[in-house]
Image (tube, rainbow, N blue to C red):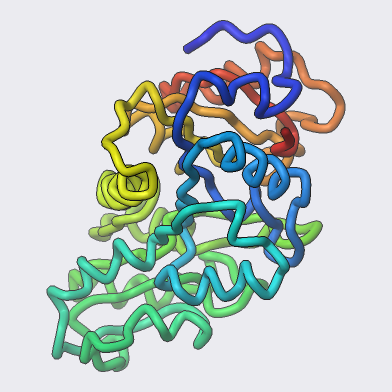
Length: 287
């Protein structure tokens, strides 16, 4: 990991070193309710100076509805060239269950994930797999699914998790995501399948979009990942071989005391478990 002695003053300090950015969305560009405007402005400025930006999100829906959500929030299209989601990557996994019955966990708002796949929903005792987009409500915890997990395990059902995030920032609170339930199932011996961050399929799709936007192929050292999660963004950057700008002021804000100028060593030690090459950190993305 690069030796860092202080927080990065802004993306402008790193931008000349990179021709492309893969940026997380939830926790970096917005908090689930409203945009982080300094982040939006930073991405707009980066693109205005010739850089390419692909948003890479663990949202469990296909990219189209997520772009619609960003539009509704007022995030301008000038902030990014393209977007890829865990939902996009997960649809490739779900092709193996086309025409079959699965059990489901997650809200109805995630229905677009299944469009056109001819997948039927059924109870746990007849399903051939479990698909988790998120927990059923934002107030749920993985413990609420203990009885269902026992059935899944008894029947040896694979759990396909469309959102590997464990938690996410929503306004001023932290809520559980599908990845937390996937972890709980794996902890009791269940089989889990994922395609979003930090796994390779979503990064391969994101890089293809980045190459397309720029009109040429990027080398790994020309790409900067920006994200707020050690588990997904930092580990994903490490496994894909690209540098990381870590955003401390989201899901890890309390652990790092992010808005009170935490020592650089504390942040570096915190991220080091991922083995990512962290080249900078800041509480909120800004230019």
